[in-house]
Image 1 (cartoon, rainbow, N blue to C red):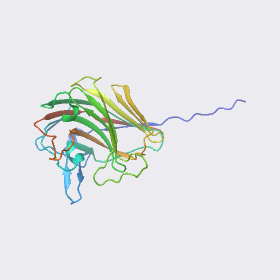
Image 2 (cartoon, one colour):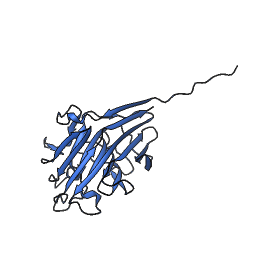
Image 3 (cartoon, helix red, strand yellow):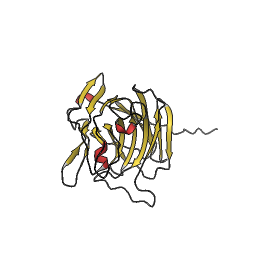
Image 4 (cartoon, one colour):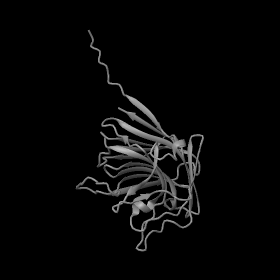
Length: 252
């Protein structure tokens, strides 16, 4: 008699992170982002004149940029940002994906300079310094793969490069319109895949750090290097970001 072997089945679980109608009730679903500093104060990623609108399930933020930090690059980069109130645990085996739609538009940003003002999806692992991101500007987007010295975070020591941030820019998307962005991470395989509008645009293998959990962040940012005179990231730009809810899918 032939023996029947049941192949293992893949388990898939999907959750939606949105509920933007609660955006003013900080701590319920979303918090204003930022970092606690050594002196006990908290640096908020909050633009004081940002206009926030929630309509048809979409989060809209229009932010005239004014916030800057003259000493710490990470504090200078993000201008207005929301963190998920609870981090999302990464499965030991299988993969986890984060997917959403983003539209970015800006005024008075430097031509052909994505990093003068953009809209972001950030997956931040504050247990390792890991960051997986999409940065979206008027006419260019970038996928980002990094391990960073976040304030208060201890990054594991290694005999390889400990801190890095690798950007990959592209213009193959619908500029100033909604596009679909997806990041998939496989902890067991040490692999990251970035997708735009359903097409794979980047794959990173051999990730040197095991990411444990991601805080999902939605932000308005710049990425301008500090100078000996301090920050040069603000010069009258306005950035408009729109985000759909984030679909989180775990496959094990």
